[in-house]
Length: 376
Image (cartoon, rainbow, N blue to C red; front, side, top):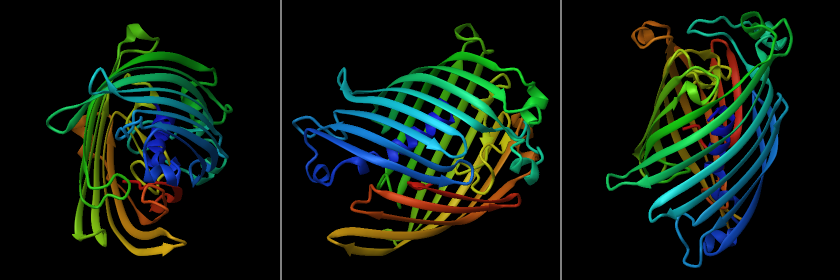
């Protein structure tokens, strides 16, 4: 799945429960429809506006986490991104399997391209003149099955099909100078296998426990018009309580991605923006191998009761680091990239309805991210 689909899936997971009515929070039985406006801002995408709708069906017996979940989302960003996303998820398939099917489409006239490699240059004047951006469109489908095992890991297998089309905005962009100004399009089929371990004390504001995921994606060349490629990803998050009851805790996240040199550009490992290095532009560094470590100290000191509902607020400081290379043996020989900053977060009505603001800095500038949910 591409960046847009992943971002929407993450947003759906973060804000899904918040879309349920307060009555549904008290009695999760039967069907509950919720609508949630999208109002986010980031330095990379500008202002994002949209709407998310979700229909939860808990069945007559109150199935957890749900019997079925149907999601739909449309989003528009002032920096060119237009995204639509739909999903249907069902638990209890053939006993204990969990089915997820997704469709997505995206069009972005500000898709970033700063070149390939670990030391590509960045010029603020060129960025302001849109020399680092090109037009990109894609749409696709992903279907997967998930199964819980006695070890606590959820195993996942799936199949995805994606179509992509790219073209430079003008002959003056970096993308045009390296790939030409003619349209480039194609499709590929992706075989997906992975596993997820969920052991956090709470999904939305975790302060103890751990989370881990691993996945491998492979695309045979005979099932598309791209070359065959393979990519592997790992994500490990840990939360250590320093003062109990979420008064002070330490959160870390380690990520690793490696892909074959024949991978499509949108599938290559990268560093930059809120997913890895807050403070660098999104997709700032792209190559075949990337590793990042993010650390954050958090506290939740504000705990009030406003108009009969809980209001909570907290803050944290973070340090993000990462390295990227064209081959694994050269990964740790290349420069270490650093980003740092502060985060503010809060919730109202329930802990599920969580908003956050990250202010990141790097030697190339600063960035702001306003959205639902924590970065880690």
